[in-house]
Length: 116
Length: 112
Image (cartoon, rainbow over all chains, first blue to last red; front, side):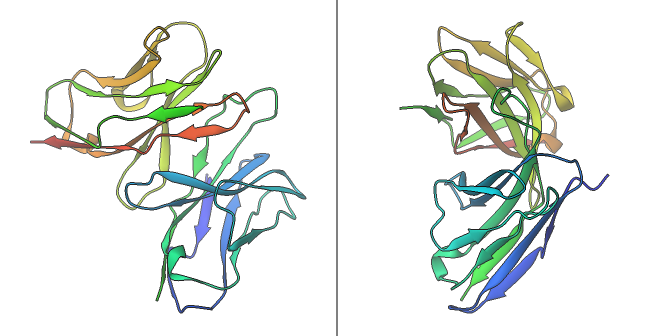
């Protein structure tokens, strides 16, 4: 059972380049999330989605875009990479609706992104 | 304001000794509380949760957590620490807006 799969695992970008971080889950979860993790700063929510075709901003959405065309996939796009976006990015999913928020999130193993 | 605090950046414990990783929260009403663990170069893994009922919750890998409503705490515990428990631990709470609020994490080091 694959769970949440993120690709690539590592990437180095130059300033101004663009890229898409891929995330796929095979658990038929409605909710999906993108976080960034910086040392000592915990997890910051970038974007989330409550189902196919529906996305919403989290705490730190600037410089990022997402789409959710299928239940399984939730790619994160960086259009103009900046050094401040150097981070570890985690995708997560959960089975949850507005009446039942007690379901845990399942995480991928992250994409380590450096922008030079 | 809704918040979660993990007051210790790092906890050191000897192998075989009991361990406690602390978490306090500020959320009105009845909270949903979670603990996650992150091993090096891996994503977070769910350990346990408190929704309602018994204040002592048992989870994966021998961990347990005690919900204390009067102290607004949800401390993670294990009776006998293993070197393999060394990892980063995150506490989280579902806030009044049904969104998850994360603590900043506590690094646990278990010394042989």
